[in-house]
Image 1 (tube, rainbow, N blue to C red):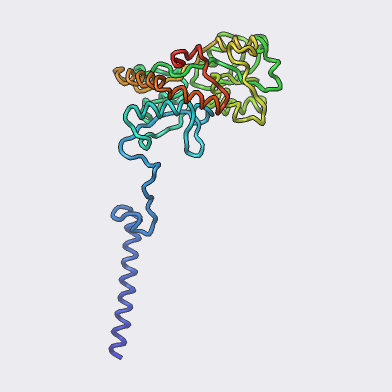
Image 2 (spheres, helix red, strand yellow):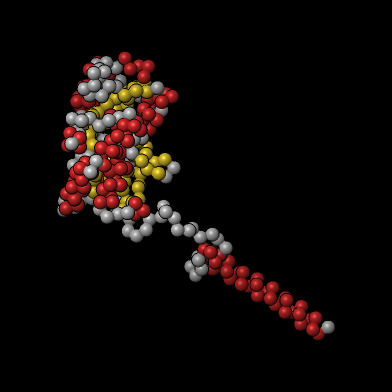
Length: 310
């Protein structure tokens, strides 16, 4: 009987110790300081191919422009993305060290100034000066597109000359010079601004805007994303199918895409310019242009991009 009592006491003591240890472990896990997640019975995140290794470079890009900068389930693609990737790798960053940060063009300068991004690669915003008055570093354009108009396909024939835009509401994106230049050239238009191009596209589809104005590549990307809604880009520039209105709008402005960095002494900007020239020399630029044409049906204007066509 004595032996039985001793065993019972021993068993009870072990249960008490286990409860004590469990309570300590739970407390420790709650604090999250002394033990790793695996010690708490939680699965640790294993090393992943998507986890950056070593120093990283954060590149602000558009994520809603098919053919230029598009985020599809975490994977970025498009002409601007190809340029960003090429520049980053030439600066010494491996693929795993490149982090893309989606931003609106209106907040590009803020992202750089507040060190939320190391560079911005997309259509150049109007804000190229910091809040302290310092100029951001801006590369030479790596892509230049004419201004264009996106309209409902069923109304395409209604947009044939400048008078077609009398009192028409044109949607443009905040942070770009598109609206201001269009209004200066054609004072009879009414400009409304949205934060993003998809918002402008929605405004067009629901009848809140009569047309969307942006650079031709962006417009072709938008059109390719909503085939079922039947929208179209008015003929580009000198195309034989272009209306006089399309030619007029194309002459209003040429929209440059460039690499913008924080204010510096210019050394990095010059280096980026050299890298962009190398992109043309080794045919990477041309491959990206062909991919964009296959993706959204837009080919860069050979006159506006003559240096890149060599």
